[in-house]
Image (cartoon, rainbow over all chains, first blue to last red; front, side, top):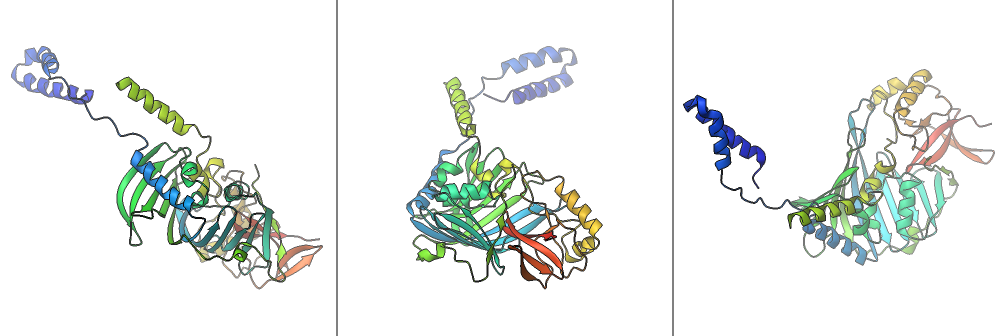
Length: 269
Length: 141
């Protein structure tokens, strides 16, 4: 069906022409002209809110991660935070992340806002700031999925790559997604990628997935559109290793001599 | 046919919006925009060393800065917003002030079984918040 505004505009154009020629008949003629337009052609159906191709690519990425018993990667994050005058400031962190399913995670982060390591060994989660003599510790649930949720909810930890660590990344990442589409070809650090765009109520996010046999996530960008200034967090993932030789001991925290345990604040709700 | 498409789309939209909480939105911003956005710290006046150090001279100004910066943030933040300043700092911060780094040189000390950092006679209680080590000015007895 042609857009009604277009139909009306065409009618008005005819009316304008007639108005110049035969002022007295303009109105009646315009009505006739509008009625005389040929039957409108059908317009193509609008694309689905969730494009199957975009979902399929996210699913393929998810399957690669699901299939890996252990993996490690580097995550470089650029995080926007508003300053007091509303101006956005960018803070940079680089993390080395090692995962061993179903219950071990190690994160070593260096950067502006966070300079700390995290150990999850299936029973306990520990945070320890390098160069300090203090660590925080809490009992942890038995799976990575539950522990990641606890870290984000109770301890208010930012975890932009959390989705990739889960048992089923696709299922979790698609929660609340309202639109999904394929934004085309792209390249991240020289790696050919597919650029996908998703939107949720609170955030818009994009993910760049490597093309070819190993569709790994290479970048994730999230815009928190309901937060003041709509800050963005962009994380570039590299150095993927789907069969890392991570010693079991790397997931267990051993306090350095003289280190003491301090309070690890939880969210006040 | 057309009506069916519309109904299907509507169903899809309802289905898509049915989970109570979206994962990605929740994941990246300090545990989540979904539960409330809160910056981890406050930047009073400016972040450049000179501006921040200037703002930090004089306890009253610091107190005011902390109060005003903390006010608009939702209540989910686990502790008072920390103050960033350029070292060295020559003022005595008010008890309760939270900082992200210490004005060195400092030494650790245990008072009644609690660990503090003693920086030129000012005691800082270390704690972890939102994935980072912070210090709160304390008055250990």
